[in-house]
Image (cartoon, rainbow, N blue to C red; front, side, top):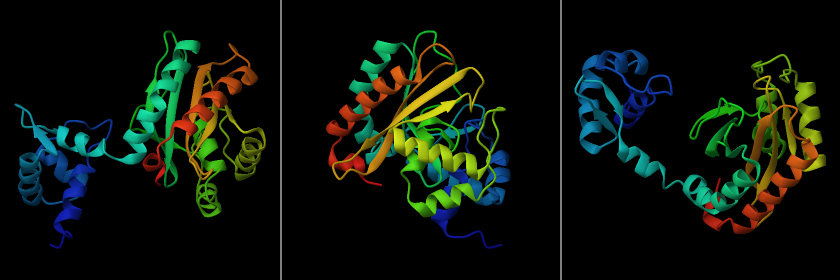
Length: 250
């Protein structure tokens, strides 16, 4: 049975882990990776030896710290986060609301940092997590400034509905993207949960390209979008000025 190159098979094993599958047995790894148990057993042992996986007393496998160490070197993660963190913390202290920093990876949003405010509205996002570009404030910002082919790729697919207010048609999303570009910020009003409003603004690199987005997520009805937009855009401009060249690579 041909199962592909060794590196591809190792990546299949690592790809078996998800936020809902953080601890997997050998048979779990085989089932979710689609690889034979014997292959998984051999490669998992090598991954454990290198530190990409860890094995607990119950013989369950977990993602190893070595991968976290390597992943933290990604310029769009660590460099961007380090430049942005002082301004994210300031925004969090001023508002006591959820502050989020995100980048676009292909046709999805990846969250690089999130600071949860005291008593802030619960959100579905997490650091390192992915989300649809069409639903969140940061996603709308990143999609609005994405290349045309990426926009068309996203709009050609069915859009997942999270609430009754989620934009699900290409016409609705295109209108939201146009509004985002015209205003200079995006609004996601109860698109992900019915109690949350998100306002997001773009972060630019030294060439003026949008490389990330920052947002505030608040309880719906507790603040005006104009007031939130002013705060978010001010933070986005400050982060843009502080952004080192290596953090802007895409």
